[in-house]
Image (cartoon, rainbow, N blue to C red; front, side, top):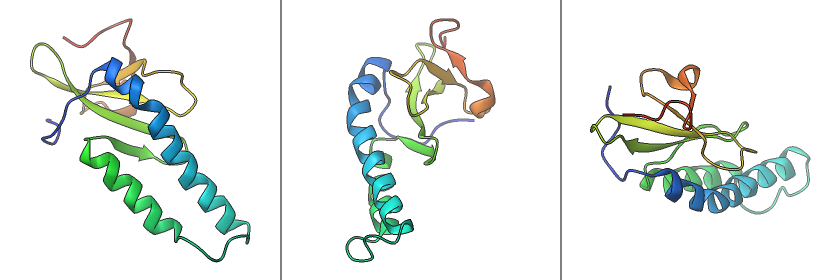
Amino acid sequence: MSLPPGPRWTRARADAFLPSIDALLDSVHALIARRAGGGGAEGADPRLVLRGVLELLAEEGIVVRDLERGLIDFPATAPSGRDYWLCRLSGEERVDWWHWPEDGMAGRTRLDQTPPT
C-alpha cells in the first residue's frame, strides 16, 4: 500500500508545524462549540471552515483522521524508499509515533523504539 503523491515530512518538520496545525484545529473546535451552544448563529459555517482547513492541510499531504481526537498523519518516506505515516494525537508534545499505511492506528509504534527502515 502506498501513500498519495505529494510532499513528504520529517519528524523535525512535522514538529515545527504542530503549533500551526493546533491553532487551525482549535479554531475549528471553537467554532463548532459556539454553533452547538447556540451562541454564534451568525458568522462562518463550521462545515465550510472545516473543509477549508482540511484542504489546506491536504495540500501539504497531512491527513486529519479524527478531528475530535486530533489524530493526524504526515506522509513520510523511510531511507529504504518505503512510505509510512508519522502519527500524532492532540495533546502529544511532538510527533513520536509512526505506522505503516496498511497497519493504521493499531500499528502505531514509537519512533525511538523501532524507526522505519
